[in-house]
Image 1: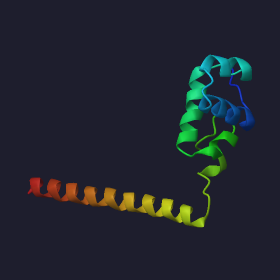
Image 2 (image 1 turned 120 degrees about the horizontal axis):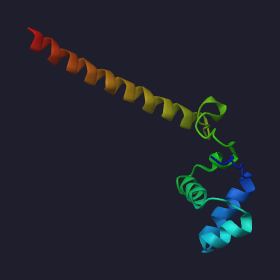
Image 3 (image 1 turned 135 degrees about the vertical axis):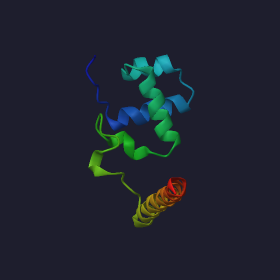
Image 4 (image 1 turned 120 degrees about the vertical axis):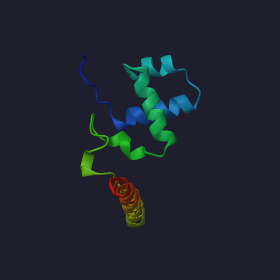
Length: 107
């Protein structure tokens, strides 16, 4: 396997801006010395999803950098935590329902 290349955030943003301006992928790659076409696609996905914070994260740390996602404000953090806890409750409800069915079958 090849070595990982860490591109500065400025290069990533410039590449996205060039693609949005209609510059062909090959030209963007040659001007900014980007090795892989897939990397450029990933940056475009991050941009379209509004995940601009990911441009500043180091290679291989997109999910665990800072031990969790960074939030714009306290409200966004609380909303994400609320969503997570609701999902946990739903899982427990489903498990409880399955447990009841298993118990009925055993009797």
